[in-house]
Length: 76
Image (tube, rainbow, N blue to C red; front, side, top):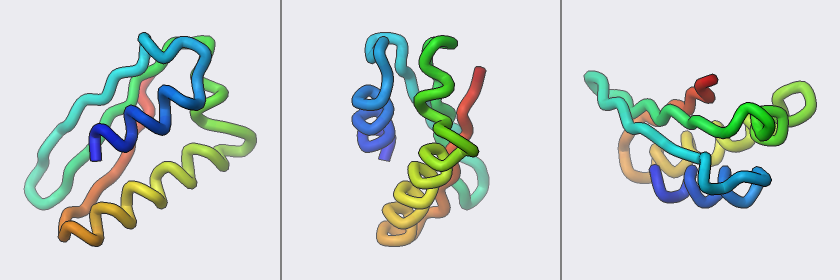
C-alpha cells in the first residue's frame, strides 16, 4: 500500500523526489504518513480536500481487501 500511495502522490506533484511515505503500525491499524514539498501540498489536498479524500478512500478500500485498516495522514 505504501507503493500505491507513492505512485499516486508522485504523479500529482511537481517535485516527485520530495515525496516520502512512512508506515506507522499501531494495534490493528496501519497509518501511512505522506510528506511532500511545501509547494505541492495544495496539489495533494485539492480543492476542498477532494483529492485527499479520494486517496484515503482508495487506500481504505485496498486495506479492506487485505483485512487491514488503513489511514492516510498528510504531514507538513
